[in-house]
Length: 304
Image 1 (tube, one colour):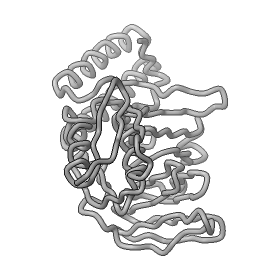
Image 2 (image 1 turned 180 degrees about the horizontal axis):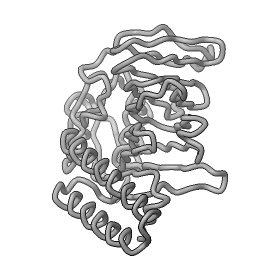
Image 3 (image 1 turned 45 degrees about the vertical axis):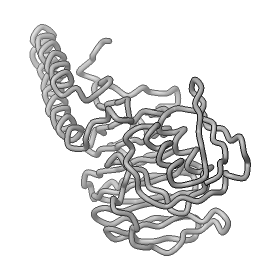
């Protein structure tokens, strides 16, 4: 892989193994801080490249690359580090976290995006210059750097979230559940003609039937953004919805031998330790059994 420090504007980090080998939030944050320091060092290398010629910059490239490798190896956190986001033909940067993966994105203005499984974000090459607009499919947590002149706007197709400097989560997988959760600061959420201003520890959901936003409500789980804490939250969700979440988290296929069990309901927050642990918990708390062959999990009904 070639590293061009002069063009290095974006840093994002992918990591695998969302199951029992997952790293802690503290480890991720520590690695992220080190990555930001490396970004500053690489930016210095770019300036030296421009001012003093390629030979000195070349030395800094080696130092920066070795430091990055050492930081990642020492922490044992990340599956891979990417020093530039892929640019599409339309002048957009796009970052994708496949099923069973997550990504951590550092934008040019210092804003941070944590991308959940089966999600993608895209933004213009003009990001930070003329706009700070982000398009999201899936789920992501945003830590927004303050800039009063350029609002930070996240759009999902149905809803738009505007912030100046704050921390919030947006979930929009296209399965009927689009929710914005605010952790810090203030955001304006709009959908069509409806809008809602969220205060910390509030959330609001989009109603597909009416095409409008519901009323802001207090966050109702122990962790406001469970997936950041390696937890999975369900609130009167069907087994079908639970299965969909499993497919995203563990990159598996879930099928049902008995259709009647699809509408069993589940409520609670459970640790996202491993696929087997989640499957066992479901069988312990409901009349369901499971088998697994290859990458396919099959649920079937059973007597209690």
